[in-house]
Image (tube, rainbow, N blue to C red; front, side):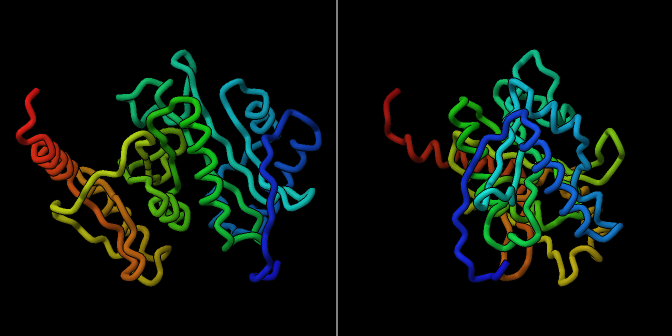
Length: 256
């Protein structure tokens, strides 16, 4: 698709129909076919049953962006109930299920990349989550898929955990975002800049080890410095201390 083409896409909530199911399978197949063999683990290879279960679920929403009759992007949002078994049980356990929105991977047709569809899907899911009273959005992304986790950071998600998927021991990054509170103020906290380098994929083994150490030391990854290609990390305790100080100053002189 020409890069300068104006895209007018239609958002649709997909249903359990043969047509919608085929569109999802075809889009996933096209994306996987475009990856090199050592990159195909970047996305979860969902089966027909996986997609069917998502479409039939009472707490999952499958969204699609269409260029006329062509599905060009899809994403799944899970809004689990407190009695549901949720995805990513190993993460954000301090929250009740009913407070969480679980963002699953966004898939974009290779011909439509570079047009902000991933960010658009993030915004759609966030709004639906807010409409359902959810407080925290969480997601898991393969560590060696930096395009996806850098994009999530740009949209306000933070690296809150770095580790290994309990199902297959893959290196993964867990991100979360507070949907109902403004982003923390980092102005007086000491920053650590993690340079991604000119070849992130080649550097990823060393970067992952550094990220593990940062996580274990109590840091969270908060932003991407695009100009220098750095991920900016702050210690959670410094952010909390800064927030407390600002709260005290804002309320100084007020009588409770």
